[in-house]
Structure formats: structure tokens, C-alpha cells
Length: 282
Image (cartoon, rainbow, N blue to C red; front, top):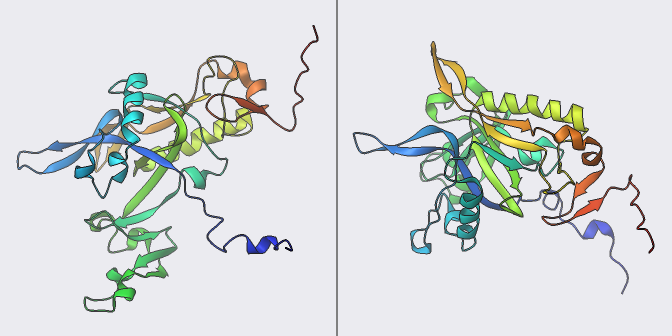
């Protein structure tokens, strides 16, 4: 049988967009019940790992909480970091920031379904926001390319549209089987993380797979929550945006961090630019 051309082994505009394996999501706040009985999200100063849900109480917005493997990750997270961690050991999976920290202007419906997403210039909007009720079903569910007006859009701000970032990182002390996602809408956190990544890039030459080869194989980067006074509507309020910090002592492993790449949760592989030392014969 003749070998098929390589171009016939991939699907255009699909095979080049991998979906990151998400094991769970960490929150930056908790829901607090107000006097009126309604639940309101409130920011806290630590990372929150939501409790698992039984299959009969599955949440369509958070389906991973009822996944059969999630309870094991939840218990491991609590055993390593406790109930209110302010710092997490992380590994960044890729050099391209848009892969593991995508950001956009997004508008969600009450059912948690994405209705519109844009970058300030162009946007993709669901037909249900364009056409009136009674329109053909396929037109309601299709996506349409439109101009994005950014802050000038009628849906921006009070209309429900806003900045949204999704941070995907490895938590190697919990598991290396997939990523954990952390969502943020804070422009302060997005700007600070961009600055932190610039510093890491200058020092180590890259941002991904920075793990010390010395036991116990500490990661060079940690994700933290740090208090910061932010002005909002003329008032200074305390918030706890995320930062990516370099672990103390990581610079001592700089030569090794520049030569090694992580292979999996238990071992390492050598880069193509480094020769592996020969073992001495006895």
C-alpha cells in the first residue's frame, strides 16, 4: 500500500489547535450568602480548591467537579497545600503565552454559555445576540464575525462583557497528568504576570519546564497571591492579584535549569545541546 501524503493525515484548522487536558479549576474567591439570601462571589487572599460533587449533583458549569478522578486530585491538593495556600509550585507548559494564558473580552449568558468574545478589534458573536426569537435554529447557534468596539460596546462593563484570562499550569506536587485552570478578570494580575514573565525570560532564557535537577526537584517558579492596594472609583481597596515569582535559590541551579527539560513527573530527559556524562567503569 503506498504511503499517504502527510497533508492527508491532518485536518485543516483543527489538528493545529490542541485542547489542554484540564483536571480541575482553582478559584480566587468564595461565594458568600448576603442578607437577602442571594450568593455573591467574594475575593479571598488564597487559592481555593472546590470540593468534589457526587455524580447525581453534577454542575453543568463545573463538570470536572463530578469527574471520578477529581476527588483524588482534591485530596492530594489539600494534603500538600492545606485549606488556604497563598503560594503554589507551578510549571509553565509552553513558551507561547497565548497557549497557557489566553485572554480576551468575553460575555457569558446566565447558563454559563459563551455568547461573545473579542480582542478589541474583531469579535465572534453568537447568533442569539444578533437575530430575534423565531429565527431559524442554525442561525441562532452559529458564530458571526463582527467588529469589536471594546469599551465602547453596549455590552461592556455593566452589560456583562469584560476582560477574562484563563491561566493553565502544572501543579507537579499534585499531579503531572494534566493542567489546573485559574480564571481572572483583573487587569492588574494580567499586567503583573506579563512583567514577571519578562524577568524570568531574561534570567533563564525561557519560561517553560523550569525544574531543578537537584532533589527534591523543586520548581523554579511559584504562583502567589500578594496584597496590593488598587484604586477603584476614587477609593483604595486591598486586593490579592496573582504573581509569578522566582523561588529563592533557583538562581543557584541556573546552569542546570538552562540545560534540562522535564520529561514527566518522575524523570528527566537531556536537551539536544547537552552531552550526557558517561558512567565510570568499575
